[in-house]
Image 1 (tube, rainbow, N blue to C red):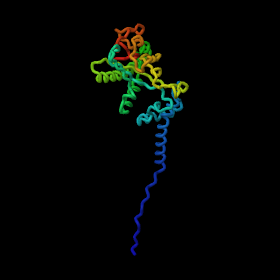
Image 2: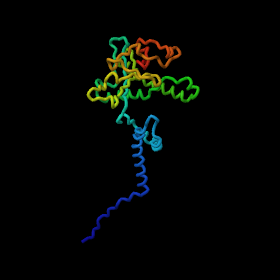
Image 3: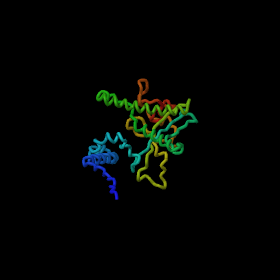
Image 4: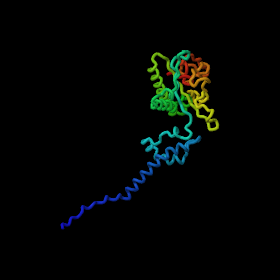
Length: 265
């Protein structure tokens, strides 16, 4: 009998302990970046973020931004807060055929991907909103902050104008205006499953353009009513030839109004 030796199966080389430690450290850092981003949001309060969580997150912030791990968790949180919408006024305020679509709209937007697109655009416009300014004293005290203010305002106006241009392209020959709305959620004590209407007029309010203003409630009778001239707030973003906020003009069309009521750019 011939002696045939079976082929020897070589065992894989063991991973060196140093390599194992590096891999384990990378896994721990990745899990930490995934975990600390929502923890930072959850521990945020009226006084700002938690200093201890921010200290832990600081070395991983760039890594989280590169992989988009620090996405907005507010939408999925137990208390997501109010939602924001964009309301358009297509036509003159005195036009009987005035259209006032609201974006997004569950009853109109289909497929749902279109609703999600409008939802993101409306939230983005509110997220980047920056009031007109800066105050004259800020230019003297901190020119860099004043320049940043102007740049933030310019970005907001550019994005807002793109919304208006799109609506004008869909409605040629008609005046188009937009304003931002906020849809409030009832508190725990206010909510009654049997009687609370989440789409009631009282849950919507107009978001003015001024800095930290008192929001305007929507007029009763409709979610998106045409604002009466006497209900429109005062003009903002004055130009050298425009009246001051203390003596606003009485708007008669969307072109005379600002975003606080109906904003045309």
